[in-house]
Length: 403
Image (cartoon, rainbow, N blue to C red; front, side):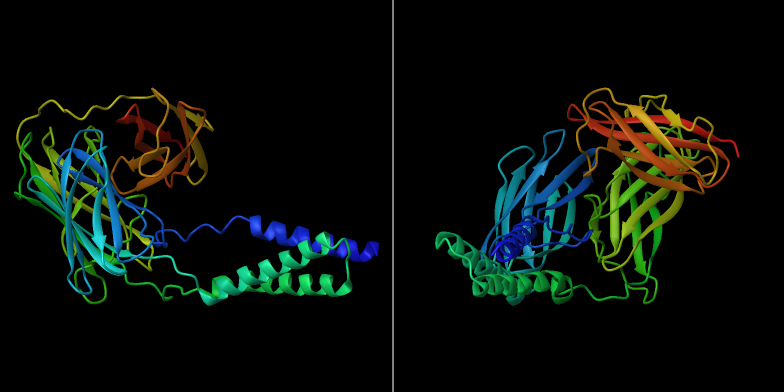
């Protein structure tokens, strides 16, 4: 009898732990049913994060909210790429979400207008649905629980009850282990890397005057426009622009203005050569870094983009190429998440040949910690970025790798 009770207790504990076991983390950059999609874009000098709430059912409301440090109003138009059905609305940063209407699941585009600028976001409306094997697993757990509870209420334990509960729990466990293979997955194999070309309009920007920096993306195999970028770290693309000497720095998130075309408006204060880097990631493929350069003419002007130099704590104090270094930077106020992370670190070699983008962890409430490896000896320019008090803070510093 004690053996039977022990077996029943073991089954009960196993079932309980499996029910409470945390669900595996969703695969990176894959739109999951019911999960919000966050996309940050740069409209003029304003960073705006749009949040498209996960849809629970279709037809139904698709709620879109906007978040930005400064007031901004956006006109929205949702269009289905399946049947062309449309829904319009407007939203202001920090205000109630706009309630657009999605008639069905599948590919959609969201046209976002802020003044004269227009961006088009491509995404899929995905609605949660129960797969047959999910129902089998849930039913098996339910049967196991009912058998065990029935035995407790009847104040008796039989081999039949224990065997039935064990069988039901066994079915549930097997289905749970097989679910990653039963669930639909994206095709394997990946896609070719994109080829990118930076250009400016006008062709020769002038200091203090606004211009457009554009990036045209083409498939490395077919030459066709690349229009399948995955949202990674809350943006379809991260663009870093620095003057060659590193005195001027911008980290922006361009708008999709046409298939395979990303564009952002900039104004730069100093003449000279500028280096541009774009971090992108195609769906079903890996991330890549695209580079370019352009010239700015005119006379130097004050830079409205504030940078506050900082002295980091480096461990080890003497940096060695190819060995990891931990960088700790104090923050001016409690750190708030930005682009899904507590902090970001951009590092560029002095000659511009190397660019790294690391994400930090909070070290207390007002400090950030990063770990990265620098590939070669020499001087590196670095910029730490984080949000605090509703503002984006940028702190530059330099590092020397001795050997």
